[in-house]
Amino acid sequence: MVGGSILASTGFTHLAFTLSGDAKYGLTMVFAVLIPLVVASIAYGWIAILTLGLEQSRTRLRHLAHSDALTGLANRRAALMELERWAAEAEGAPVALAIADIDRFKSINDRLGHEGGDASLVHFAAMLRRLAPEGWLVARFGGEEFLIAARGALLLGFAGVIEQMRQTIAETPLIVPAGPYCMTASFGVAARVDGEPVGSLIARADTALYAAKQAGRNRTERAA
Image (cartoon, rainbow, N blue to C red; front, side, top):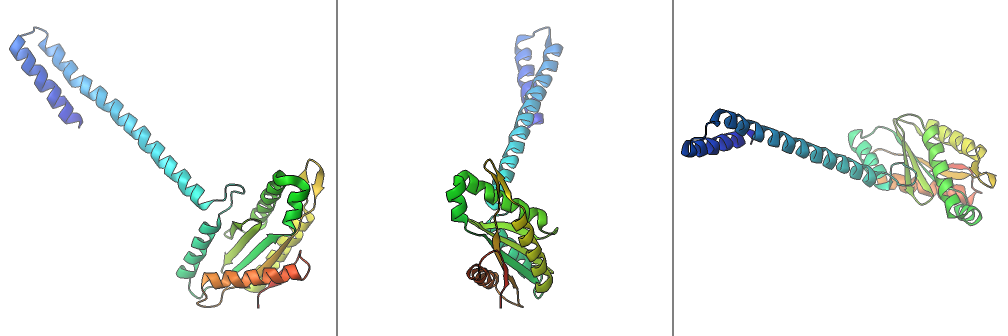
């Protein structure tokens, strides 16, 4: 592009001065070379800026497509993709999963308003992120429901960590303008059996969560 611009500029300049015989031929030919170089440099710089901006926009869009806007956690889509990847890459390797649900979330909204409800979701998500060991998957699965998963984890040890998380959350109140607000959550835990589809694993954890709710909430139940 640059070379073509220079050849075209100098060619037309040479032709013009051949026909006119201007005495400043040499100086004009220098400008005929420099002008395309300057213009091309500006053009390439502008293209580079546009390309960088486009790539940054794509990165933001990818992040938004896989993240929950309110809590910053992975969203349902991203969580399912990651679980499917785990299942495909390490067939037979242990994968443990928990579904968590904030207890009586409607009453939180009723008492604190929707802003307070959002604050409780952010608080709960931050607690899960802080308490989950490195490498664990933590996601907002929908509404007030969250997913926590780990690969290479056996059910007994995983359930023990989840129970510790539940206790810590119950002991760490949400701070709102009206004062501290204690909130709890129920957890259903399941471990993947060889060849089990991800959907089945989630369904079993969800059934265990339902059992925890039925048993009085603020507790951890394991899937059969």
